[in-house]
Image 1 (spheres, one colour):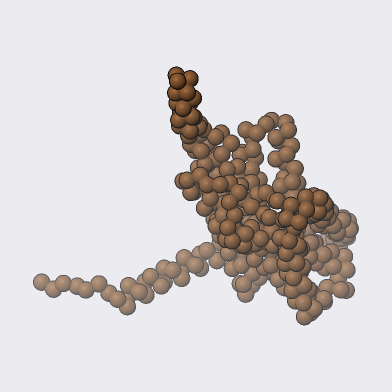
Image 2 (cartoon, rainbow, N blue to C red):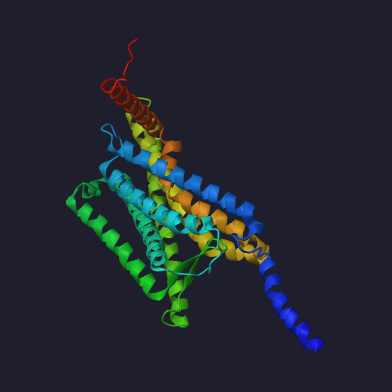
Length: 354
């Protein structure tokens, strides 16, 4: 009888003991409160920086005195759209799941999660396509200027539409093979590619990985002849500067700055692919499971920051862009001040007569 009572008491105590246990591998647990709020602050600041930076870039592109070429503005505009598409799942899924107080099933999927997870994939593939197109544009403009008229024709707009369709089709293929979910416990996007068969899912993930790596490799191969061409032009410009004006040097400098921007953007994308597929696995092997949350915070911060890499490179390397941003901000404050003054003038405060 006493033995039976002990067994009953043990079963009654076990749920209470399990409820008081802390899960060190769940960022929503009280044990990881500091990591959770650090992640929320970092994600929010990077999202704010990305949104403001891309809006400023749009303002500069739309200004009358923009010094960027029409093709560069058009391709960069597509990259800005991709950035905003990438920011949306970060706000709707990542931040919302982190702010929630209750701990729900980590892999719980709803139709809202499915839509925004697919949007995340679509924006990433579109960004890869347009970054490669930007590299091809730089190659044609610098190495093959005879064919640069293509980027001013209506065929170029058709090419942009085809790029969007290509990214959409690839996203649908991935959705056909895999479920993409966000694991809120450790801030990790995960793929479950066993919708059809486990074997086909494994093959698809390998093909997907090599397909993603092919983009930065192709960009690197495109930039090699561009680098040598600009180096050759620079040597010729130095010789011409002794007998002529510095217009040629300024043009070479402008092309070199655009090349640096494009290379940094392509390099950032390549690093993102490697981090997303290899960094966490390597860290888990070398250190252990306790490093999973900090590594995923870093990866997600890097993914968000990549959405603002285009305005960041312009802000660092292009002096004219910094000047245009300052002028745009000053004009914005001036218009706001004038609007406020006009509203006060139109609706004056009622005076009281004594």
